Image 1 (cartoon, rainbow, N blue to C red):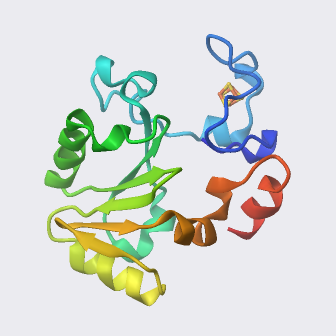
Image 2 (image 1 turned 180 degrees about the vertical axis):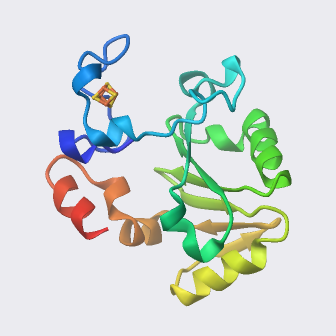
Length: 168
Ligand code: SF4
């Protein structure tokens, strides 16, 4: 996860992580508000993020207003982890109960798996935003070069993270 208060980019270990959080009582708001679905018990023990290779969270409703339904995001911490059978099963399970899934991959961009009946909503939203995407097997894929422009904070490092978080 990105922690702007600590200037911690995505895909980088936190300096306060050491078999737990060494500043748990004083952790910043981003960490306090973090909505990890594994911690909330939405996944099996064996699907813990460090084992399954991605971190899942519920997208805040205010960011998903146009889509008018629940959306979860998975950030891969092991590249390609979400294309494995175990992850595909989880994505399908969410989609079946009306929840769409966004997968954030550092090397290959984003993939969007719409919940049943929501592909037209997603397509319309992408088109409205001028997003370049490809459709394949009912999912939408946005390549990494476009993602770097659309969501630069995902690719930021310590030198520009704070600046980018303010503008995204
Ligand atoms: S909860 Fe603690 S260890 Fe985790 S990102 Fe926040 S400050 Fe770092």
